[in-house]
Structures are given as C-alpha cells and as structure tokens.
Length: 444
Image (cartoon, rainbow, N blue to C red; front, top):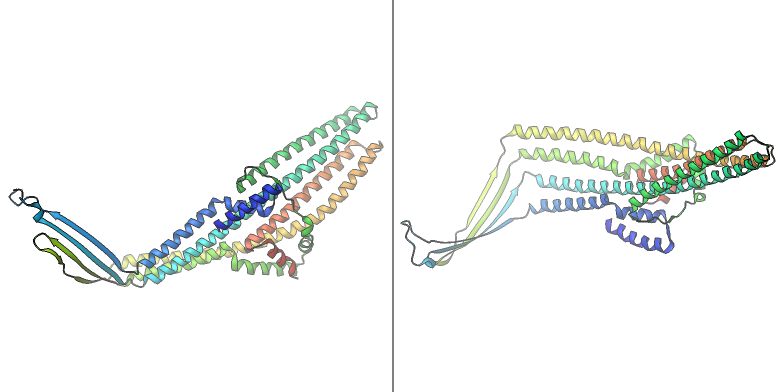
C-alpha cells in the first residue's frame, strides 16, 4: 500500500506541476504518501508476519554446535609443565532437539497470529479511510473558505457601491449625516468580514499543506456540483421507504467491510483463541534430543565421542495458577463480546446519522439555491430604488445582509453535503466515490 501510494504521489506531482492545479485525487495521493501512521501500520504488519514465522520455526528441530579448547599450564603441585603443547585438549559437540508435543498450542498460536495480522490490516484500512477523510475535509475547507471569501468580496463591492451613492446624496443634501455614517460603517464592516474570511482561507490552506506534505498549494480544482444534481434531487426528496431501503443497503455493505466493526469481530475471535490457549496449559509436553561430538588430545589424537539420546516430558501440577489464567481469559472473551456489540451499535448510529445528514444537506442545497436567487433579485431591486432615491440605505443594507447570509448557507450546505458523502464512503469502505453514488441513486 505504501509503495503504491508513493508511486501514485510521484505521478500526481508531475501532473500538479504541469497543470499548476491540484485535484482532489492528487491531494488524496499526497496525503496517503505523507501519512506516517500508514507507514507505521505497514511496519506493524511486517512484524506480525515475522512473529508467525517464529512460531513456525518452533516446530523445526533445534540445532546446536559447540567447541572447546584447553591447555594445562602447571600440575597440582604448582610446577610448570615442560611441554605445554602435549597437554592440549579440544572438543567439538553437535546436538539436535525436537519438541514432540507442546500440548496442542501451536495450531492455536498460529490462529491467533493470523487473526492479529488481519486485525492489523483492518486497522491500516481504517487509517487509510481516516487519511482520506482528513484530506477530503481539508480540501473542501479550502474551497469553502475560498467561496466564502469571494462572497465577502461581493458583499464589500455592494457596500462600496452603496457608500458611493450615499456620498452623492449626502453632498447634494438629500440624506442626513446619520445615513451617510451608516453607509461608512456598513462598508468598513464588510471590509472586516473580508479580512476575516481571507484569514480563514489561509488557515485552511495551511492545514491542507500539512496533510499533503506540499510546500505550496497550487490552485485547487473546483467541484462540479452539476454532476451531483441527480444525487441531490434523489436524497433531497427521500420518502421514508426509500430512506429505509438505502439504509439497509448501506448497512449490509458496512457490516461486511467496515474496518472498525470487522476489527471488533476479530478481537472477539482472538479472545476466544486466547482462552483455548490458556486451557492448553493443563496438557503435558514432550521433547527429545540427540547429541554427539569429537574430542582431540595430543596423546590420543582425534576420536569420536559417544552419542546420547534423551527424552523428557513435563506435566503441570499448579492447576490453581492455570485455572486463574483461564478465568482471566474468560473475562477477556466476555469483554470482547461486549465490545463487538458496542461496535455494532456505534456503526448503526453513525451510519444513520451520516445518511440523515446527507439527506438534510441535499435539501438545504436545493432550498438555499432558491433563497439565494430571490435574495439576489431583491438586492437588484432595492439597489435600483436607491439609485432613483426611492429607497432607503437601511433597506439596501437589509437586502445585502440577506444575500450574504443565503450565499453562506448555500456554500455550507454544498460542502456539508460532500463531507456527508465522504463519511458514508468511509463507513461502508467503498473503494470509489462512484460506487457509493451508484448505490445511493440505484435504489427505490
């Protein structure tokens, strides 16, 4: 996964520099390649594979090779020996031992290791979707902040136009100073809002830089909301029966593939295997060994040492210790079963909440579009009245405020809808966004 992400990121780098734009897919690739947590899970998985190999090696014979050498320098009376080289002794030993029966622990240990590897894979998959969610959220936040910034600039232009008209009317004596001061205050307030929105945009860009590892963020590829029209229409008008149908389809996908839920199931399985392993301590163990070697002395030369075969076994008698361990593992198994039930309940709530949010955001997008259209027409109408000296500055200010509020509502609803889709994708572990969209649109 890590190598694939790095390769994709390198390809995306070339695309970014060639086009000077950053797409969502490119940002995701950068985020995956830049994630240290994913790299750590990759190392953890390699470690569990090595642990599995180590358990397999315990079934193989254990080999040992030893060597020794000695020279006598003086005798018991403390007199140095005249010919030290004749008192040289050397030896070479070789032994082999084999565990014949370990109480049936190996198959259980192998099963535990296999489950542990799968748990690590699920944790890595969960982190994979967490990185995608973080990058998607940061990417959408930049686009949302940029749209909000443009909206504040538009409001500033409206306030500046209102101020210019107020100056003309004030100089001609058509309005009092209070109304002119109100126009000044409106313009300065919009200037403040514009600066604040610019700051939010800078902070959002900084977060995206941190997640992707890019030193500079080029222009972002915008979202084609027209491509979501069918989905917005579908989710924005869900009947109770249609909602239940979509939810059941999503629930089926989540039960089968959600990494956090499947991890809870695997943890429950591992707890059961650990209980079985603890019970194996009641059983005896048996092992055998064979050893031989070579001896060398100056007087006798090289000669073969005798061979030795030994068979050993052990039977545990401290049953109270083993029983206590079994009881602990039994409690751990029951606790894991409760965690599994909690994970199922949490997944059910999260999935329902995400689908409800998607439907609500879809409806908000559709309604806020209409409200924005009416508010824009209202601003044009009031502005024209103000030009003709038939309207008040307060009416223009109220219309501009309503327009700005509706613009912000639409922006929040649009990107809130995209975030809710990202949440549904992660909960169901969909490989692509399109597969989720097909499921949401294809059910009646």
